[in-house]
Image (cartoon, rainbow, N blue to C red):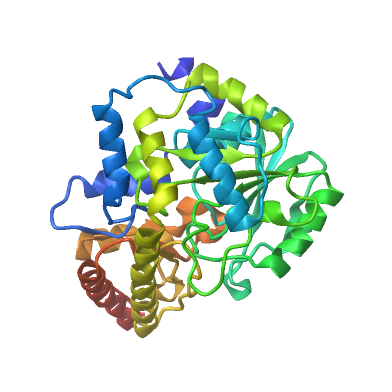
Length: 389
């Protein structure tokens, strides 16, 4: 039956993350540091809002664009947080998670012959979504020595005239890197010079530790060139509610809404009501989560460095991306052997692009007790490998 699949689908590899967690499902007593999901429960006021919407019988479709009340709240939130002004009637679309928003952007603006420029390493979905839209992908390498920031020199080196869309995903999954205003301004100049659209995936924008996130869309001249993607999964521990959004120029949002209305129709109404409440009342709970992540971040970086491994200190999101090349193992070998010998699940860096080789991704969205035990097991594993070299 594979002959019936399109070549794009048939040739698409399965997610490098899911491969390992299918294996984890067959094993007992595994500590998993693999899934990028908060271990916190959605704040009570937010859950209560969802429950109340069900009790009130709010179980119907919303407009394709989403509840106007939510879009109005988001318009106010984006203006207050990033100094971005979007018309809630025409420039904001509510999606089934930020992942759908990414897919809609790719399908709306990319086609055969187009090229998407994707930072490497970065989230696993960008390249496949571009390929499924009929485009091709050019990776833009980033490096630990540059704090995994996207540099305009590296962008210029791989640029081709067919490039149409640049993906920016900072704070970054898997590295935890961020980019400040000074880092972003040369990228903005490059995008303007080469007439690139920019997909700014800001899903981790609230999860920064030492400095406030700067939205690419807020830079001079970049608002209408940027499709601002965000959601509620990471900041408010709402992964299962599946509420995201994309904001941008009305003409681009209109195109994405066409795809959305023929496929997803609308995001779940209960989740939309919960998202309204999150924006109104859950900022304290969100800040408490960030404080907890910060403690875990320091624990993980210290733990890997104590093992003798180089580890970039993440400045955002909730991942560490240690360099395991000293062990003599590839990323996949390290992850597979660690899982079988010590029952700790991590993600090989190559799941996030070619530049991820020599690294593993570990999420610290887990309890301190789990993280401490995982670090102890990883240290035993690393010690054996370094001793045998």
